[in-house]
Image (tube, rainbow, N blue to C red; front, side):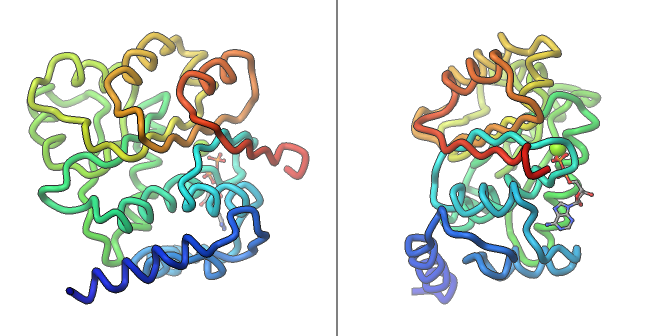
Amino acid sequence: RKRDDVDVEKLEQQVQDLDPKGSYTSFSDLPLSLPTQEGLKACHFTTLTPIQARAVPLALHGSDILGAAKTGSGKTLAFIVPVLENLYRKQCVGQDAGLGAMIIAPTRELAIQIFDVLVKIGRKGHLFSAGLVIGGKSLQEEQSALARMNIVVCTPGRMLQHLSQTALFSVDNVQMLVLDEADRILDMGFQRDLDAILEYLPKDRQTLLFSATQTKRVSDLARLSLRDPEYVSTSEQG
Ligand code: ADP
Ligand code: MG
């Protein structure tokens, strides 16, 4: 066996042994791959924010999550770290692995922000390939880039366009779906696009849904997209 396989097995065991409801204060308290640890260190992230402290262990463990916390509470890392780690441990990265994670944001600007964080945390030794699908390039250009991505950050309308028009684009290996700012996605009228996207994705995926507010429409979406979710709210603690 290769050394990488041994490391991944060891990490997997540590994640199995982790108490997903335990209380953790630092990223270093969690079983994270060396590339992620290095990436976080390079960005000077050490202490977990409250939403990260609750969501990351649960998400590492494989749970679906419905997360509500106000703007500025650190929701981006609460999903980026589990996406990187879960794909790493499943070895769903590299040239032939296909698309392993889809991160959906309401606007192009937000998608770009998420992509920037992903790249910063991921550049210390992770081997995934990631990209943006937010329009602004031709469908064809995006299409050929998509064929090589392990992680895509996208907006709902543009992603649905690819799913319905790009015959060669497979989402059969998608392990994780992230819906960021779900309340805004719905406010912007993307409900039908989201419903259609969900139809394309494998049912046995893990889904992380984050929202700044809890509305009726968000809980309806949660019912449709999440399986037995852990509810993580830190609105009281700020
Ligand atoms: P949200 O999505 O909840 O609005 P962000 O993920 O955009 O919040 O994070 C808000 C700010 O907090 C960003 O500038 C980010 O770099 C910073 N931040 C996030 N997590 C941490 C952390 N664990 N330690 C220090 N700063 C953090
Ligand atoms: Mg955010």
